[in-house]
Every structure is written in structure tokens, then in C-alpha cells.
Length: 109
Image (cartoon, rainbow, N blue to C red; front, side, top):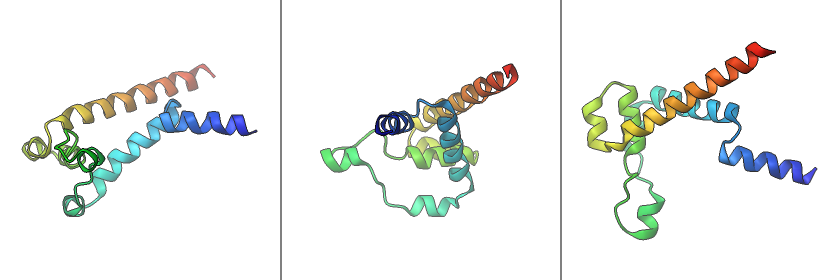
């Protein structure tokens, strides 16, 4: 029982189960879209890399950038972090892949 639980938790943590990854990534995008941007913008910049190393981290501003992209504010997204375009694209690709993989698996049943 313990080894099965450990296996499940390790797969959940690494998001190797595509159905968990699908709902996790889709949930993140929906949450970033429906939360008021003023709430997202007022939050303190929390970057573990910057805190631990005391240097600028390239991930700072990606969450705000993705939230801006989801609202169609492209210039604002670039100002927060240009990498937010890449992160949004990767999230959408993972969601699409997992959706169609699940759809094909469902159709075969």
C-alpha cells in the first residue's frame, strides 16, 4: 500500500499523469483569467531564486505576464516578462496535447 501511494504521489508531483496535468494547467489559466488583475498586481513578487541568491531571476513577472496575456494586454505582458509568451504557449500546448490524448483514448473504448 505504501509503495503504491508513493508511486501515485511521485507521478502527481511530476505531473506525469496527463489528466492531472490537464486539470492543473487549465485550472491555473482559468484562475489567472478570472482573478481581478489588481489582486495579482498587488501581490508581492515571490521568487525563491531571487530570495536565495539575492540576484535577479528570469522568472520574475511571468505570472503577471501570463495574466496580462490572457486579458489581451500584450504590451503589458512584455513589460512584466517577455518569457510569459513562451510559458503561455507551453501551457496551451500541454493542455491541447493532454485533451486530445484523452479524447482519442476515450474514443477507443
